[in-house]
Length: 529
Image 1: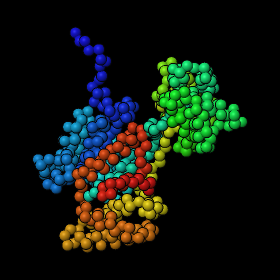
Image 2 (image 1 turned 180 degrees about the vertical axis):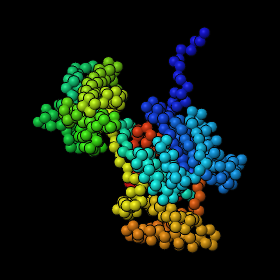
Image 3 (image 1 turned 30 degrees about the vertical axis):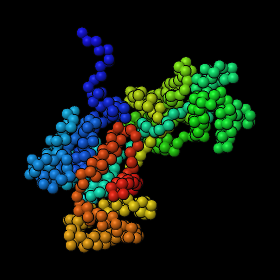
Image 4 (image 1 turned 135 degrees about the horizontal axis):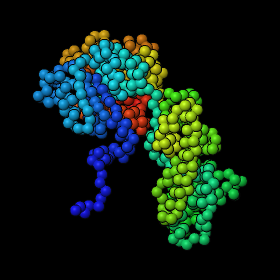
């Protein structure tokens, strides 16, 4: 007989406990259903896969036709001496699979160039394609395919002490962006139930114990209401007015360290926060996909439209209440009662939004089950921080460069110079069939040739750049010798994997669209190009 009264936890929950805390079961399910393709089994590419395999990505496929040689062992931890002379894709897959038995892994011993040009339909099976060190020509073709077929494409270059990656994706929506300080307490425009609850407390008549357990929400609402009565119904708006209110609250403390009143003073900043809709949620509400719903609209847009209907009608300009209450100094009775006030309002708002969504689904002849109740609830709880990202295609970036963004970046950020150097190196290779990696006595010659090449390219796209600002990055790139460094590959691999997980789970806010990591200066920059 077992005397263990602890509830059993399934092995999967134990295994993925940490990440379930980060993106919950819904995010884990999305991750486990995702299929990843890696083009070129570089050291950085393998590090990306490592960071996707460990949390349980659905499947990975490695594509590479190269043969492992001694030089590969210096930077790639997923290659061993015994792999020399074998296919690189097969070799790294054999070790990557050992990281997590739940992940399906396969390889294809074929040149990515051949697949992209001859059988692009191969990529139909994948959700995310990781393209390592592709030529501009191949990358543009792959970009066009991914744009047409709504695939996520992440192009990665990592040489020496610097790395760069670029995300291309279809329209990307985020409901759970996980912001800090995401609590909506409605202190500036309390609902009737909350105002009535706050008014039910008689602070002056309370004994010391009860006075010290009044929730800070009640304290703030009472003092704001008192202020409004003394100022023609106007709340404290200016900094000086809020300081005056703060003094009044402090004067009402019965002891110097009354914790609930200290909390009220610390939360006073919330009175300055606006109840206006954020630019991000307005962008979603004003999007054509929110205006015109069809049977082909995604569940996100039905939920968004339902919330918009609520805001414009029952919400009177305000989003549905999330209903979340932070920890605070209070006794159990007061906290539970206050929590019920917020939860009841949140439930009523959710019910109203669901009715809007179901009506919208009926109008276009789609089943109510098309938009899960859980998704509507998530949207109501997180609407204030929902996000819509539109990614420019790599083809557009390469054929119509955003010269203003590049020029602005160069003026403020050295890392923009490394972006240009990476781009120029690919073009250099396309022309000369080699990278600028002069060694020994020829190093200076390649530095000069590469500098002239960069200058001519920038001039051809209409950019006037003082080449002295690029001299150091050009020189550094040549001395990188087109080689990967293990520690930089691991770091950049972690960055790329993190962004890929954000894209797959639709949680947290991914970059848009280019990230440059400068290991020399230990800095990173994000550019929208």
